[in-house]
Structure formats: structure tokens, C-alpha cells
Figure: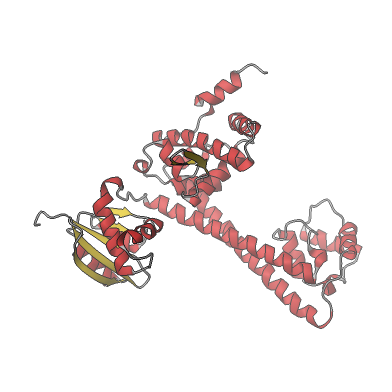
Length: 402
């Protein structure tokens, strides 16, 4: 080594990666591209082995893995930050892979002291995160398909909507698989409906006569030559919903297994009304690297639970924090909003926030910020949540009734 510090920037892409290495004065000493292949990533490691740090836009993937395995310090600089830095280099905001690689390296050179090297989570956390996010994506697709099915039925078979409540339920899907059109459902009589319900093991409160009357009162829907074609569309949507639901249930079982063996699983399952899926989502998005969040406020800021203050001259505004980890915020808010159903402390905080005139989302964020301090303490100490040691909760329980 010649004693000169060097920094590398990598603009990640699907087929190849642009790399730029600069010296401590900001001069480019090497520019090259490597293929997204085993040989290409091996070449990348060999050519950046002697740099003092590597900047890249994403925290995961094969590129990051080979860099970390080689013992190189990796710093993640978000894409939105790179976009903001383009104007600094006179690029008029234009996207260019080679230029972005230089921008990443230069940002590491000038602001490296402000940036934390990437500390990857343990493999079991990475696996749990992938499973939780896959389940969430499938649930979102299922909801979209149910909405599509409802819109379709509103035109071709209105009577089926609301007949059994949720269109994704077992009984609703079984009905539509057997009677995908109004013409086929016309075969039903109150007695035949009762027999069909009994064969399905239906335990609802409505009788066959009531359900038949509801069908008869609804608009008839599509009949004639196009009815069969519309029925085929109905069947395709119902089967797709069923397939996704089956995969979601399989992932939920896998999540329960991963959560049970995870070293931090007991921390998050101890939270009130966390259950398995919510606990897994919180653990997956927070991770297991304690160095990433040295204070509860650092976790609250990333989760969007703290407001953002903007100040210029005599103007000062405290606003919603848009820039945050959306997946972490969703996981936290989902837990927090339901926690007030079983935690008197959470319910009291929420009630007092609403009494001050805040909206429901604002009150939930206030409660989320309070919960972050509790979760962070348990997470740092590696202990489960214990209501008996939650001083604010105990003070509330012991306070005299107003």
C-alpha cells in the first residue's frame, strides 16, 4: 500500500455493475464494470480488496455478500440520497451508472465519518424477514384478487356478493366453485340450499331459505350466451384466491417455526396481542443487530414514529416524517394499534392523545413512540416484556380511580 486512502462506489444493476475507485483527493483511479456472475463478483473483490470502504445503494444481495465475506467495510447510501447528490456533481439529475458509481465513492470519501458500516443480521433473521415479506406480498395480492372478484360479480352475479361475508372464506369459495353464475345458482331451492350447506359443514346463522331469498332478491346478472364465459372468469379468480390462500397458510406455518427457534423470538412474542405474525414482522424489520439502533430514538426515527421538524428563519413546522423505513413502520403500527385492546397503559396513552384533538393515525404514532422505548429496552437486554416491570403500566394500575 502507498498510504493513500481509496474508496470504491458500486452502482448495482441486474446484469452488470459499474465500479469506480477514487483516491483521497476525489480523483478517479479506476473505472470498470463486472458481470453479475460468479467470475465477475470474484473479479470485483480482487480489484477492490485494498480500498478503505465500499459504498453501494442496497444492503443485501450477492454483491454485498461477497464484499462482506472478503472483510471489506460496506456502507449503504440510499438511492434517494444519490439522486440528491447528482446535482452536486453537475449532472442535472440525469441517471448514469458510471457517474453514480463515482458519486457513491465520493460520498463515502467526504461523509464517511457520518455513515455507519453495514452490520448484517444473522442468517435466521434474514430467513425470517424474507418469509414475512413474502407472506405480506401474497396477502396484498389476495386482497387485490378479492376486490377484482367482487367487481366482476357485481356485473355478472350480484347475488353472490355478501352472501357469506368475505369472498375469500372457505364457504364463499366453495359456493362460487359450485355455482359460478346466476344461471347455475337458479337450480337452488331453499331445500336444496339446506342440503348443500349441510354437505359443506356450514355453521353460519342463516338458513338455506334465508340465503335463497337473498339470492332471489338480488339482480339476476349475466345470462344467455356470455354467461358461461363469465363463469369461467369467476372460476379462475376463485381458484387463484384459493391457491394464494394456501401458500399464505404455508408461509404462516413456516414463520411460526422460524420464530420459535429464533434467539430473539421470545422477546417479541411476549408483547401484548403480538401473536406470531406480528411478532415475526417486528423482529424481521428491527433485526438482531443491536449496534444499528444505539438509542430508542434512532429506532423511532427510522420507524417514522417521531415527527420531523423543519425550521427556516422565523418559520418552524413540525410535520409527519415521510422519510422512514416503510416496512418497519407498517409492522410497528400494526402491533401498536391493536395493543391498546389488551394493555391499559397503551389504551390510556391513546385515549389522552385523542382527547387533545389528535387524529387516529397521529394518536397511534404517539403510542408507537412510547412502545418503541419499551421494545428497545427489552430487545437490548434480551428479555421478554414483563408487565410487572413496566413502571408506567404499574403506576396506572395502582392509581386511584378518578
